[in-house]
Length: 147
Image (cartoon, rainbow, N blue to C red; front, side, top):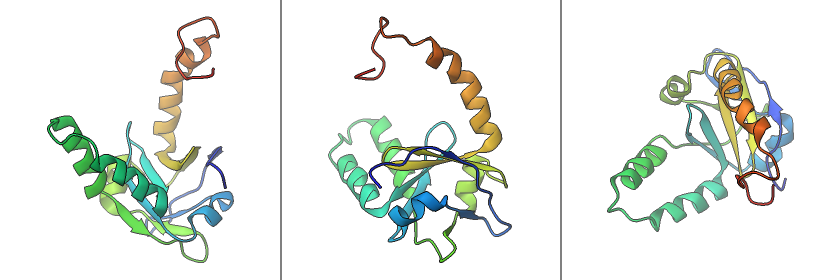
């Protein structure tokens, strides 16, 4: 898989296990890392991608408190796992609590990672950002290179 794309709505089971969308299981079969994301979601990286991102963080200046805080939280909450034969991964209680995950989840593909959202939180996020997204136009300030 070149990149993670799309929106999926799996559920957490009573043991806090998330069923990974079938189309992503091959890319994550050798291992993954779940960690705190931003805006109240979780990030799920293939292990190799997590290592690449973590190595990039090593080169950031530790003289910045913001950098130290971000790197600490990102790494301290990281949970490595390998999906079981049914494609399930366990989401630890502190990560479920952070993301407000109970049962209904939304998993979105975001390039080199997945994001796991509580479905209600994801829907609220979309309501907040969609008006601005819809208003972006080719003649306005460039928000994303190439668009």
